[in-house]
Each structure stands twice: as C-alpha cells, then as structure tokens.
Amino acid sequence: MKLVKRHGLVGLLFLIVLFMSIPDASAGSSRLLVTVDDAFYADLDLDGSEDDILIDMTLTVSENAASPRYSEYYLTLQLPSGIEHRALVQLIGRFSELHMRVFWYDSAWESGWYNLDVAAIAYGGSVLGYVETSYVFDPPTGSGVGDPHIKVLCW
Image (tube, rainbow, N blue to C red; front, top):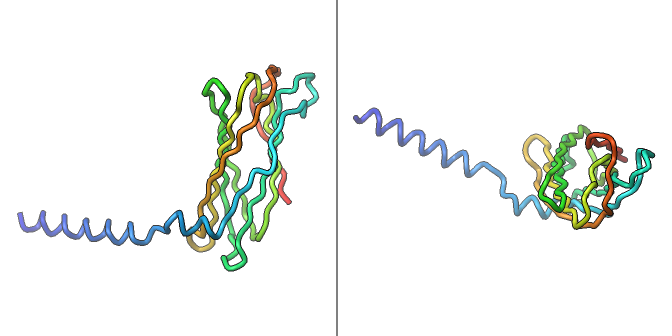
C-alpha cells in the first residue's frame, strides 16, 4: 500500500510541475495580436456565384517579444445555420508582422450573419504566445458548384 501512495504522490508532483510550466495565455496575448482586417464575399472562382469569401488578416508580434519560428492559425467559419468550415494554416519562418489573405471558395451559400473565429499560436523554442479574435459579416445568399476549400497568400 505504501508503494501505491508513493507513486500517487510522485504523479501528483509531476502534474503540478507540468501545469506550472505551461505558459499563461493572457501573458501571450500582450505579445501577439491577430486582426481580421476585412472579410467579404465575391465571385473569386468566376463560377457566376458570389459564394466565395476573401479574408485579410494581420498577425503582429510586439517589439519586446521574440520572433516566432513557427506559427499556426486555426480558422473557423460558422454559417448562420451553425454549419462550420474549418481550416488550419501552418507557417514556418520568422516575422514581426505577417499579412495573410485567405480565399475561402464555395462557402457562403446562406443568407445571414457569418462568424469567423481565428486562433493563432506562435512558437520559438517554446510557446511564445496565443491569441484569438472573431469577425462577423453578412454575405448574400448564393450557391456554388464546388466543395468549400481555401487558398492562402502571405507576405
């Protein structure tokens, strides 16, 4: 029985140390800023339907923070009915400011308000920061012929 208590105590100490080493998300939010500059609909794939979405975003790293080597962007586009389209964009490379343009094709087929959620996480040798933002916009009703998919440009 003493062996079980000892292993339990060691496991508990391990969990305490593990949770103490995880960076605080609120501390990272002061070092990173993700902004959705614009999101609107258009006929980007020239199929005759304005059912595509163009999203412009900027990720800024504060001057006193280390430049990330790797970053991930989790995008969730929620339609008025609750249907969600999700995308993950992974980038390798250092930056202090990054502009990203996302072309989300054949995704806006319902009328009403669309919600775009973006979660960004930046890594150096460890997690440098995590930040989230949302953007709400209202594309028209329309229907395209393809499945939803994205194309990403960064500069």
